[in-house]
Length: 484
Image (cartoon, rainbow, N blue to C red; front, side, top):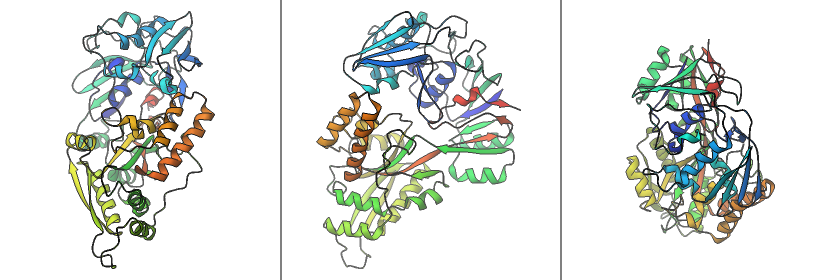
């Protein structure tokens, strides 16, 4: 039995209601889905054998034959249909939060070996919604499943039990979408306190902790704990510095360009993030299919930054750099690492004449301030995205809160046109061309200053073999892990 720790229990073990990260990580272990993601975050078939866009609004998915649930019954196209049509059922008393992802879904029909999804409007990104864990059709009329229900899945593990302290899963003996799990089972313990997680790791009570140990302890673990190893890799995440376009200071493009050139990313990565990140100059990590290889890298050049501020009309008051050109507010969360990052950026900006006040806020207050536009600068991260359509959610005019994630109220008609074209285009090569142009425009206007892509890391007992870190943080490799 392999044991790992999470900082919180999953909110639901019903795949139709799995919206938080921990629920989705567990969903991926107990249930199979039409598509999945490999260790690099690339889309791969799971229950689906293949798929094709019959038209811009019609997606046909062929289902693999003779795949079974954990009770031995066959997974059929009707099960897939029932799982997805659940989100269209208007009689459900407590609808799933995942329902919003399927507002564009018109109908799901089945044939002997296939399922066809009909959309109201063209949307090439719809394929990424086919990650919902498939349930038997008999569950389609039931409300959210809980621990006492007999949960039947087609994933590598079978749900055994869950309480306030832990979730227990056993190897699914009927699993036939791949090799059977090597471990007899997995126990996931819920340990809220980081110090306690760290102590349990060192004591051997926990075998795996991923991304929930402070980065400043990672190097200590590698050097001082012979029974533990650190696994790390580039992640699907991007940390950025955001700006309120309605503000007269950071709304100035030259000011944002100056800030971009004033931040010493390499230094912050080395000393604040313990080297567990790579610099970013676009939303997409270098491993992404749509990453623009021709995009110029952001450079650290404080002198050029000062000249940009001069050009913007914010000249050095006395010419000696002792007085600030202007002052800004930078809001962040109460996370100690995020506060350290904010202070480091504030220090860099002070050197070019921008006086920055760092405000750390409790998450709820921070989030509401950003979405209400009660902020000049802030820092956040986009995590786990799989498609360049993230640019539309972050920067399209139609994505102003509460309709999307354009929290800086950035608007550009040329960009909107490209983003709409990228959404409906299903040919990958053509989408690459579109999103290279998108990245060029965003780099020119800088609604964000992209900072870095933080690495995913796991602290793993040396008694465990076969565990790999996935780019999106999922725990799929628990199916190949075993304890000596």
